[in-house]
Length: 583
Image (cartoon, rainbow, N blue to C red; front, top):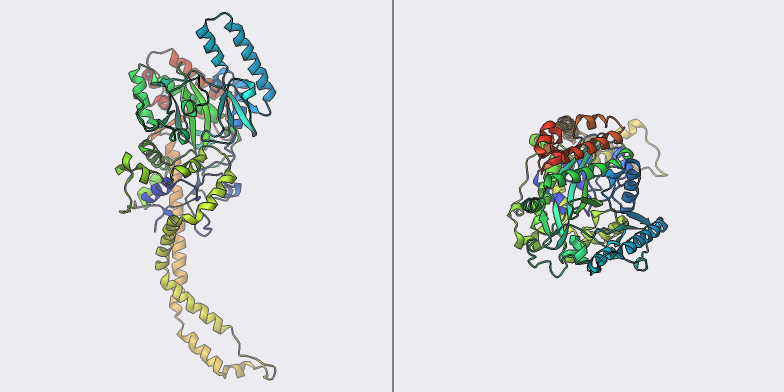
């Protein structure tokens, strides 16, 4: 039986289960209250009591109260607050307004910009006038939806309609294009602690393309302006060869950096700015997250780069999608999750206790190719994928749970796997169960007195010893296998003690790993970007976080980068800064 145990919610990605089973873990049912788990993975948030009563070696994939940046409206509110305090370093988020609360402010800003542009139009040529008219474009996004649902672009107030909480942003009309196609970056970020703040960035992410060429004259074409995979995979040009982009709608970061390098673009500068955005954004909510030591968070940051090579933060995703759409997803997400478990220290535990499990009926991930993706890479068809991919944000969790409950009857395969594990355990305890049955029979007979009726007098102790019933009970008691009963109790105690000893050893290994990981800047393909020097380490002592010191250090590094000709000279000055530049 495996030492490491995990449990998952029914709507969690199957790739998590497959990877953990391949690493030698054992799965238990999420409702199992009798066996302890070492990892619990859910798409929704945990209850406070789940984490408060957890043991030190039990991990959860969400922090409590860590959702201040994963809703579009709360992200807007927090970034505007930080910008008002610390200034233009937070100028990486488009001008935004929360509706309906800030509708009046939005109308004032919209009218001011329109008046400003009309004044400039009188002194410009026809082409310049067209460009200025397109400069006052806005995009409306529902606050609690994801996958591009409900998003539209407008240039006049009469076109703005909404029936729920929404965010209105100034539309970025000058994105960096590749062969005429718009793209954004899906960056995977892991936070292992908020006190002290510890941030890892995965160096290999996803580049998501629109499937129609960028065209401001057609604002209603979602395949031209939105980069969501759940939308573009249904586009008419999805499977077509699109110049440099190729077929499909995804690249890896490696492909993007190679392309930009061939265009003589400084990718190190872009990467530093992106990492600065990640640190500043997480800094906005770090003080509000309670101090816990057995949680982690995987975020999905969506970044857009404009033609001036300035990165813009679009949104931060809670429980980013981990399902597979194409081979590019496979190349990025499987190593990403394996390295994530190593960051938590489970790789060290597996070296001591766990033997990897190999199922001959399962095809290894590495053997899959593009022709297999329709069968093996995704556990959902086209009609259900849009629902399974909805966890890129904290949207409609109640609706998601209802959808999951409606599908539980069809998940017989998962139930069969769990039942198989219980059958294996029942074989080990088969003899113990038979002994327990004999014990129960003895208790039943030994506690049953002779039958007494109204016309039958009560028996004294001596009279009872002379009855046939007493003789029968005595004979049964003499034949009970006392040694087997003792063996049952002894065996259970030994198993309990063995499990407790193993968990104590696991705790020691994980504690030692947490201590050692503080001095490790790279684990797998994850790079630690915070803390990045001794000053930032000192600024995060205990519960307090000195945001002023951290922001001052980030401003200093960004200015220093602009003043030198080589990134290597800055990296040599302080080795801990390597994570901010490593590609």
